[in-house]
Image (cartoon, rainbow, N blue to C red):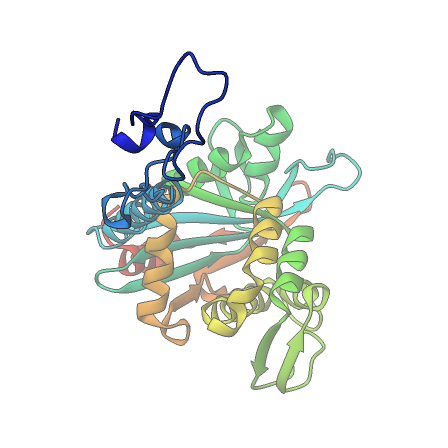
Amino acid sequence: MNDSTLPPTDSSFDPLAETQPSPSLDYDPLAAYQPIRIPKEARPRPKARRRKSGGCLGCLGVFGVFLALIIGAMLFFAFLPGKTRVLILGIDLNSDRAPAGSFLGRSDTIVILQADPLKPQVSMLSIPRDLWVNIPGVGENRINTAHFFAEANQEGTGAQAAIQTIEANFGIRIPYYVRLRFEGFSQIVDAMGGVDITLEEPMAGLDAGKHHLNGKEALAFARSRKGADDFFRMQQGQMVVMAAMKKMLNPLTWWRLPVIVPAFFSAVDTNLPVWQMPRIGLAVLRVGVDNLDHRTITREMVQPFVTEGGAQVLGPRWEVILPLVQEMFGIP
């Protein structure tokens, strides 16, 4: 405590006197309790708060790594050597017997597809639905009934029965299938915004020239037998499929994917693994839709006849068909 805080100590101060002299003006009894002033330079500065942004950035980082891994895996499998072989089935549902959402019907469209993204090569062979073959466990009948008989006996087995029938008669192994309801096909085409085809001559009731078809029109064109037979119908079906492929490869169509993908999976049943799908897409992209090797079993490869039951069917000439299969698809 400094001297200014103490009472005066001069000789005029008498503790026994009734009155005391006035204290000095310099005396301040509260001076000891005055706040202490600290220079600004000596004041501690509060610590700045750090923004907690690491959580969001961390989430984005994890998502980015996960997405990169998926894309990397897709590219890895897409460029693996080997062929992807698929049986494509267009199912004509029996409206009277087929429950909603089922696949109970005949496979009126039968296409063997093989894709090799490294070669690259894409081969498509359409098989007539009236081809008379041996169906394992059933006997001789039209090839399109193999799916129906199995599906009617046990739901979900039709596609495998169709594969077994193809393998037993054509001598090639097919591990995967894609089966599509005809009614769902028109919805897929509508989701894509329609397809465009060019006819060099009148076909299926349409004049020669360019045509833009919506889903209903595309399905009618693919299935039409107007003024033609089943062999023309197979060619028309391939034209629509190729037009759909070309539409999907056009970047201007990709903004429709949020609509196309749900329409596709609601109409399709398949055992094709997700990692196999980019292989087919890459093969088609590298080859080009116009350069696909697409053929049909022609009328020269069959012998029409009438069964004992009065059905008009097509007897296969295997000596002509099997060399074509070997040429298009190679070793089983």
